[in-house]
Length: 198
Image (cartoon, rainbow, N blue to C red):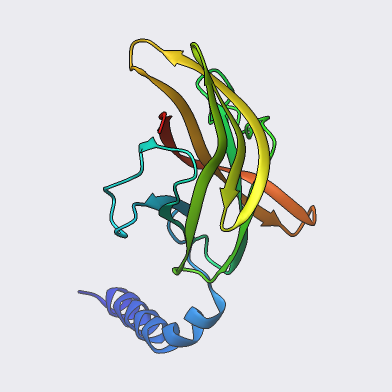
């Protein structure tokens, strides 16, 4: 090795040691890119497990599920979950176009969740004023957490699956500080329910 090789080795060693020494200070100012930011939305059954969900439901019977939101967005977030009811022919949110369902919102749950934490609520629901006429069923009222809501929703008899099917579903919306409003966050979950004669 000649003298210039020793100088290069000395300079590289000094730079390496300097970076090691100042790295804790640099970490306070330099933010490395993190993983993917995302939110979670889920429903758990009445036993607080991913099982035992209500399916065959009767009029004026109360059912329980748990609605949860998980935040992995990198900061505290403000969420609203809109509750909607549909039959088999009505629209769901469109994941490809990132648009919500056009159905009316019946109820909402609000969550303020810090990063890497979850929020959860118990949801109690029942159907009232249910009628059947030949191959059609009609639900006139949905009760969510003690609040009765007029829905006037119809479903036709599903011959293949032998039932009158409705879906109670939940859309996740996220507060956007730039627009000062909530926007659809492209997440939804739902429960298929076969409304039966009691």
